[in-house]
Structures are given as structure tokens and as C-alpha cells.
Length: 529
Image 1 (cartoon, rainbow, N blue to C red):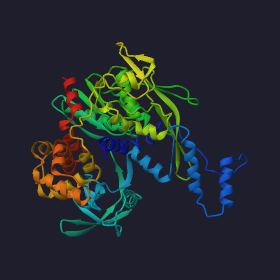
Image 2 (cartoon, helix red, strand yellow):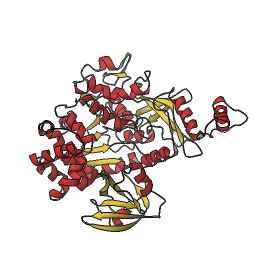
Image 3 (tube, helix red, strand yellow):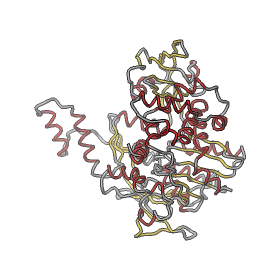
Image 4 (cartoon, rainbow, N blue to C red):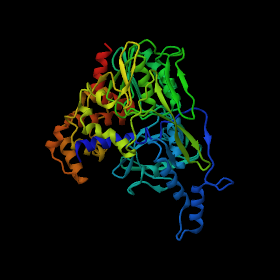
């Protein structure tokens, strides 16, 4: 696997579910469509399906054929119109609404065993006595260890109706214990991390725009302001989008009353303008917004508004380039259609949607190609000359020229540092070898840390750990040498620190460790001086 392929795989894995099916207009208006049933006004598709069902030589699952027909129709529209099966529609809704009925744990499938990596404080699992580090052997007497269980199957067994019990058998150290956990409504904040970078500068990470993102953000913003925050770094890297209403609500926190945030318009959708109100809680302090090639849709709306209105500085790499709005149309069986109904335009009037004329595969593959063609490692100075629509220009109040199409170009470009991002580094990540090293070996061998800062300062990747990495890789039939690992030593060490910090201190600890050597954040701090 080449470095480019490895980088592309990492990008696309996190991107497909973001822009494709999570970035639709979250307005209360929802339309419903009837299923495929024959009525007074039959169409050819419905008739064909009925003829097949009644006359075909072999048995056919008509629902499957029906779904194939729908998908084929959507392929000829745009890359973001998509049909969602009932389970996909439910999962998407739960993800963006930020709540579901469950037990409040995070886990990692470690060598075909479920390892509990986090237990929500005060949640049902915590109340029942589960701890991080427990290995789950069975759920409701169904074995989940040693059978190559899939994440989907785990979710199906753990989630269920509120108030119903989940019987869990775990192994803790050398003993087995049974726990009965009552499912409850689990509310998940859409803010991944919020902490102080130094005495005056705060940091907030958001990876999706859910139903309560703007409210969650306001609460964390207030908390950091009480700690002395004057300036803010808003991290929207790897944010694949979400509800339009959440994006405009977040942008409203930074902008002055009656400033235009964004507007939407389509053939059947009249122009709708979204303006900032007077309620913004961070209209004065210095602001930096971090973006990258996985920043898409709703997160591009926020970045676009900040850039167009010159409210802050955009730092990072060119964003994904999704300027389409979807609305969800629900079917009676729980499935849904996410249909593109409009385009959105930034305050200056530009559409940042990149071309999809060459088909879906080329459209999504374009992100991975940015490494191959040198964009991600460039200085960004000449990219606007080749990647944007130069036929029409847009200008800010100060006269800065902006272009439409191709995403958002940051004000300050920070390229990918490829020195340690080798084939070996990507192999260790994609095959879960670093996770195995941390959870199965290093957690046992190292004393518990008191803070994520302590992990950053004290943990070092030694020669023994490198030897262990080579052994774990060999067990998975990956041939690497200690010398190859050494080239990526710095990057591997940072990733291990982050995994350690997540295990002991959750997502906030993870980002504190991961960001400790982050070039974009270092550049942000220079801007905020």
C-alpha cells in the first residue's frame, strides 16, 4: 500500500458517511412519501416490480429489487442524494439527535474481544458497576467474544427499549462477573473537546453538527470564558456536516446582529436567508477556525461565513467542497430518502460545491487524489489558480478576492507533514496494531497517569515498545522492521499518547495529547498573539 493510498483510505473512511448522508437541512418540515403501491396513477417502475413479483421464474425478494431501482435512479442525480434503509435512517437520526436508549459505554474490539474503553459517569453501566478495562464476554447470554462479532451486531444487542435490562458477563483481571444494566436514554454531547490551550486561548473541537450542537457549544464557551478565555480556536477538521440549523446557530455566536450567514435556493425552494441575531456570546474575541479536506457541508457553512465576513482567520487545508442541502423524506417502513433540494451560498454569494460531473467515484476519490497531485504537501499559494472557478469572483468588505467551487481555501495554508507518515505508519493504524499495543500491553505495564498533560510529558516510545510493535505486526502477517518503525517514531508516539489519554481521560484527554504537536494549532497560537 502506497503512502498516497494509505492517506486516501484514512480520509475517505471518515468522509463517506459525513457529506453523503448526514448533511441535510434540519428544518422541522418533513415530507413523507408512500411506498411503491399500485394506484390509479401507476408508473412503469411500479408495474415492472409487480410483474417481476408475480411472474419471474425464480424467487425474488422484491424489497431488494425495489431498493436497487431506487439507488439506480439516485445515481443519476448527485452524490449526496441517498436512500437509507430503516436501520441506516434510525442510526443517522440517533447520531445527529445525540441520544439513544443504551447503557453508556464505549468499547473497542481487541483481538476479537470487546474491551470497555470508557464508561459514562453517572450512566446506567457506571451505576451497575462496569469499569473501563472490563472485557465483555457475553450480552444477554449471547457470546460476543471469540466469534468475530461485528460492531453492528454489538449495537443491536446493547441498545433497546428504555427501562429494559441488559445482562452482561465480563472478565475483570482474572475473574468473571455478571452485571444487570437497565437501559436509559443516553445523551451524547456533540462537542468532542473543550479546554484551555493557555491562559487566554481556548480550544473547542466539533466533529458533527447535531440537533444540540449550538446549545452544547454555548455551554462550553461559557465555561471556558469563566476560566479566562479571551480568544478561541474552533476545530472543524474532519467535520462531515449535519444539520443546517445547527451550523447557522453556531455561526450566530460569532457574528453581529443581522449579518447574513448563508442563503439557500433551489428550483422548487425559494431563496431563504439566514441572518445572525443579537444573541452571539463571542462576537469580540479573536477567532481561528481550523479546516481540512474532511471539513464538509454544515462545517463549510460556518467557515465560509467567518471568512466572507472577515470575523476570524481560517487555517488548515482546502475543505471538501459540498454546497448542497438535503431534506429527509420518510417512508412508512422506517426507510428514508435524503434528497438534494437546494444549494447554499455563503454571505458573499459563492457556491463552494465542487464538480461531480465525472461520477460519484471520482467525486469522493478527489479527496485522496489531493495527496497524489501534491496539493496536501504544498504551500497552498497557487492552488486557487487551478482549483476554483475563476469566471466569477467574490470580494469581502476589505477587498479580498474569493472564488466559488472547490471548497474553501484557508487564509493560512498548513500542509501535511509527510516525513513520518509512511506506509508502515498507516498499516499500523488501519490494522489496529497501535490500539492492541496500548490496550493489551502498555496499559498493564505502565502506572495510571494523573492527567493527559502527564502522559504528553512523560511517555516515550522506547526500543522495547518498537520491538513489540514489530511482533504484533508479524502476528497479523505484516512484515516490517524496527528501522521502518523508527522513521515514524514521532508520529507513532503521539498516537500512542493520544490512545492512552483517551483510555484514562476520555475524548478531551485524547485531543490534548493529539494536539500537543499539531502544526495547525501552533500556527493558530501565533495568530492569536
